[in-house]
Image 1 (tube, helix red, strand yellow):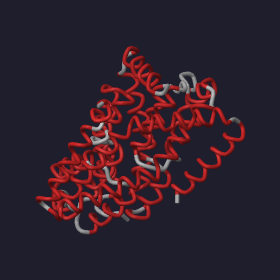
Image 2 (cartoon, one colour; image 1 turned 120 degrees about the horizontal axis):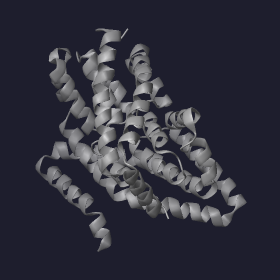
Image 3 (cartoon, chains in turn blue, brown; image 1 turned 180 degrees about the vertical axis):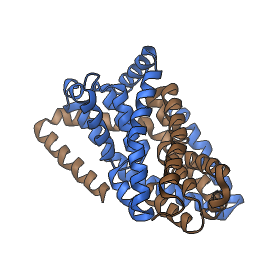
Image 4 (cartoon, helix red, strand yellow; image 1 turned 30 degrees about the horizontal axis):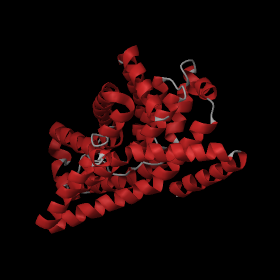
Length: 178
Length: 163
C-alpha cells in the first residue's frame, strides 16, 4: 500500500502516456522512445553515483569534509566546491543526492550551492562540447560570466535563508540518510 | 566516455573498500540502495513527463518560437522552454547550433542554453526533497534572472555572429 502511494504520480503519468499512445500513436511512440533513452541515461550515471556516495558516507570523516568545504573553509573551500562541481559528469538531478551527503558531512551551505551551480553550468566535459558545437567565443563568454554568477547566486541564497530554514534542511537530510 | 570512467572508478573504489572492510562496504552499498530507492519514484515520473513534452515540442516548433526577430518575447519564450525542458547537453548543444544556423537569435539561444542548464522546473520535486521549498525557489528564480544577464552580455560581446 505504501509502495503504491509513493509511486502514484508515476502510475498516473504512465496511464496518461498509455492513453496518448492509443489516441495519438506517433506522438505517444516518440515520447516512449524519449522516456526510454532518458531512463537508460539515468541507469548509466546514477548507480555509480549512489555507490560512490555510500562509500563517501562510510569512509570519509565529517571532520575532513568540514575542514575542506565547511563554514570556515573560506575562499579555498569555495574553490574546491567549484571544481568538484565542474569536474562532474551527468545531469543536474544527479547532483542533488551528492549535495545532500556533502551537507550531512558538514559542508557549508553556500559551498554546496556553489557546487550545484558549477555542476549545472560549468561542467568541463560539457564546455568542450559546447565550444565544438556553438563556438569558443560563445562558450568562453558564458563561462566567464557564469563564475561570478554562480558565486553570487550561492551567496545570496545562503544569505536569504534563516538559521531555522537551514536547520530544517540539515535535519531533513540527516533523517533521510540514516 | 565519462560514464565509463565513472564506472571504473566506482568499481576500483568498491574493491579497495571491500579489501579494507567487508562490513563497511556492505553498509555503503546498503546506504546507496536506500537513497536510490528513495528518489526512484520521482525520477521515473519526471522521465515520462519529459518524454511527453519533448514529443510535442519538436525542434521546428522551437525554432519558430525564437528566431532572430523575436526579440524580448523570443527570449522570454526561450527562457520558459529552457526552464521546463530537461535535455542532456550532448543533445542540447548540437540542437542550439542547428537552431542558430536556421535563423535563431544568439541571445535567444544563450537564454535557452542557460536556463536549460541552471533552471530545472521538472526536477523541482527532487530538489525540494533535498533542499526544501525556499532554497529551491530562490535558487531557480535567481538562475532564471541570471540567464537573461548572460544573454545580454553574450549579445554585447558577440554581436550577431558566433565568430
